[in-house]
Every structure is written in structure tokens, then in C-alpha cells.
Image (cartoon, rainbow, N blue to C red; front, side):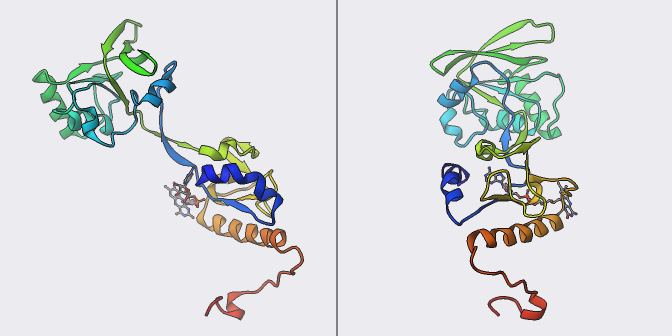
Length: 243
Ligand SMILES: Cc1cc2nc3c(=O)[nH]c(=O)nc-3n(C[C@H](O)[C@H](O)[C@H](O)COP(=O)(O)OP(=O)(O)OC[C@H]3O[C@@H](n4cnc5c(N)ncnc54)[C@H](O)[C@@H]3O)c2cc1C
């Protein structure tokens, strides 16, 4: 939806219409490891950040990176499906549920899962986006090459503005700067309300979001109906519209 809006921002500016962005802190996205050329491997599906269908990974050699619950859930989830599972973590200790750690330790003990610790992801090797090996390195930069078909990094989530970041709006530290009185952004016709916006004295409260929405709606009325005066009324005196 936001992508669609992105492509139509220009049209909105010319019409008597407005877009109101109420995107909070943004959308959740995965923390991507900073590996050179990772985009090509992501596109081909050699690097993924979630598992939608386990069967797609049957028979693969899988490197799972991370030490939290998601990493261990998929070590256990892909056991018996993947041909080989290697777990890369920068520490010897894992921050996952104790039961998951215990179950993974048992698989390591049985030689069914390989622990690669303490190591960090260092590089990817392959051609045309097809992964051949994951390169890992320890704190002394000693490298190891793990032959693999799939890398699953589970490094947590981060907030992303998504397509909104490309709308050409005035951004201040991932927030949209607006005029406090109207909530209009630097682009006429585009307004912002709630946690996504900033202005001097901004408070991130539900109450502020409601107030900003009312102020934006008033400003937008003038934009959409420039020839129709706005009669400001209270529901207390006039009743709730539609009743
Ligand atoms: C722990 C905590 C406690 C709080 N307690 C209080 C309190 O007691 N009282 C109070 O007044 N305030 C409180 N707040 C603040 C309050 O929650 C926020 O001010 C309020 O929720 C902001 O509303 P919003 O609509 O702007 O954003 P959100 O409620 O964050 O809604 C934004 C929505 O937009 C979606 N979105 C974002 N980007 C995209 C995208 N690219 N594509 C699709 N969807 C997208 C998000 O998924 C989300 O559903 C608290 C906040 C936190 C974190």
C-alpha cells in the first residue's frame, strides 16, 4: 500500500486531496548482517530472514547465525529437514529459552548439529547469488569456510521507515518534521500524525496523536474544500454525527 502511495504522491499534490502518514516508529524489518554483496544472495533466496516453508529447505546445508530464541527455534525446527545445520554465534553462551538450549546441546552432543563458536559472519562466497560457502571469523580474524546452501541470520528486528523514506519528506533522525499547527510535512498535501512526526515540544503520547489528527483534519478541510467555510462544532452541543 505504501509503495502504491509512493508512486502517486505527485498526483496528490496537484489534486484537492491529502495523504496522512500515521506510521508510528515505522515497520519492523530484520537486522541484516553487513556482508559485502549480500543483496544478490538475498534476491536468490540463499540468505533469508524467516522460514515460511520448512520443506523448501529439505536436504540443504544450512548456516544459522545468532544466539537468541529465533536462531534456536530454527535449529530445532530444521533438524531432520536440513541435511546439515551449523550454528554460528559470537559467544559460547546462548540467550534462548533454557529448554531450547538443552535440546540443541543434545543434538550437538549427538553430532547432528555443529556449533561454530565463538565466530562471526565474515563473508559470503558464491556465484550469481547462489551460495557456496559462508565465511566466518573469530576475534583474532582466523577464518573458517562453511560449505552451505542457505544462510539464516537471526540478529533481531529493527524499525524501518520503509518507502516513506523515499518520499522526499523532511526527515529528522527517522522522524518526519511537520509544522506543529497543521501537521503538514515539507511536501504540500502530505501530513503526519502520531509518533512518526516531530516538532518542537512533541510528546509521544496517544493523546498527542489524537490532537494532531484533529489539527491535520482541520487543515486538510481547507485544502479539500477551499470554498466551503468550516463550521467548528462540538459533539456535546451538536450530537455525534450520524445519530
Ligand atoms: C512501552 C510503551 C508504553 C507506552 N505507554 C503509553 C501510555 O501509557 N500512554 C500514552 O499516551 N502513550 C503511551 N505510549 C506511546 C503510545 O503507544 C504512542 O504514542 C502511540 O501508540 C502512537 O500511535 P501511532 O498511531 O502514531 O503509532 P503506532 O501505534 O506505532 O501505529 C503505527 C502503525 O503503522 C504501522 N506501520 C508503520 N510503518 C509501516 C509500513 N511501512 N507499512 C505498513 N504499516 C506500517 C505499524 O505496524 C503500526 O501498526 C507507550 C509506548 C510504549 C512503547
